[in-house]
Image (cartoon, rainbow, N blue to C red; front, side, top):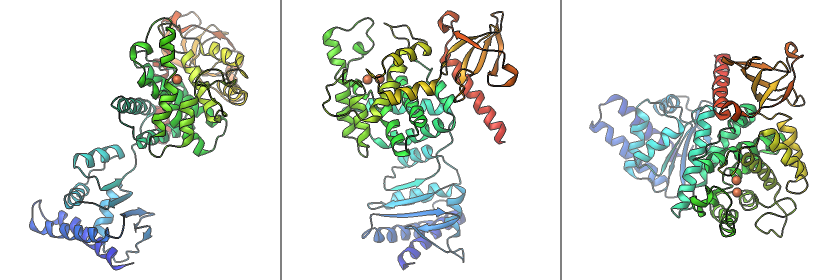
Length: 454
Ligand SMILES: [Fe+2]
Ligand SMILES: [Fe+2]
């Protein structure tokens, strides 16, 4: 190991050690902190950044493991370990106060999650040091709400004339993607949340979940799945250019207003193309989500439609059809699927549309159904290949009485082999909010998982 690395680690270690030994403000604390800063800034004359990390229980400096048999950097190591710090990255331009604030932050043994750490560093005005800690494990509803916030922030930035930052979006999509891959049914169930006032945001999140679930079903590679998630979450950001009155207007739009609406894919495409570190496929998705398979729709597109745009177009239509609008009663998922099916080869590309129909089954998640024993419940799960025998959350018994506690029945189980699905029931006729029921379902699914892992 080169000498300056050794000196830097020694100085930082000494600084952390002194914080443990002496009370705040003691002169013995200031000296090693100052020395650390001097060494770091000298090293940064010829480098862009200095990353210190922990990999497999050993310290790593600039990707080189430090074999610290004598435990010379024990304080640094322990501080990183107890605070679950994966790495500390010091960048060129770092100021003395930033380094000393970070040393202070690290020495009070409070374990912070990823977002807490980010906001703490922001509060301390630390711009040239990044501390990586694991993201908190959020539940599905928190993730859903987090995604809503991300879309709100992005649209807020655009309204203020700023180009949104892509990091928050891709971090969010990564988190959503994990859940969509591990708990597909429960996540898809959450897309039954339809909020009229926040339509644009819930719609964006729903389309993103449905798109990723479809991408997973089509076995897309990871990089495409990520671009699909980001593109679908951002697909309607161009609507910030259209006034709220037009978006929420009850009844038909005038020709002029419709022309205005039709601008949103192109406007959204322009915005996303200016975002840093954005996959080109994302720009395609945003610009092309209203171009139909037969190239009707808008805008006019001379070239080919990107394959991922076809997927988002299906998810977008499905979510819009199943949502209550002032000018439209929500369609039952079953009916929305019929509509999509009839338009295969015209509006929708055959491959993703057939995959979608295969994925959602006869009675998609979120459908209120009546069983042959006259019970009524909501579909909460589907076993692939056994679409006609879903998992159902029973809400009403055979006499039509609302159950005090919902009952979960999986029709693929032997004991229910005599029970069949008769057809769908309109939730409005029962005064039910399916979104609320799916939220409750997710909470129970997670409680169950926690019990199992405990
Ligand atoms: Fe759109
Ligand atoms: Fe949309």
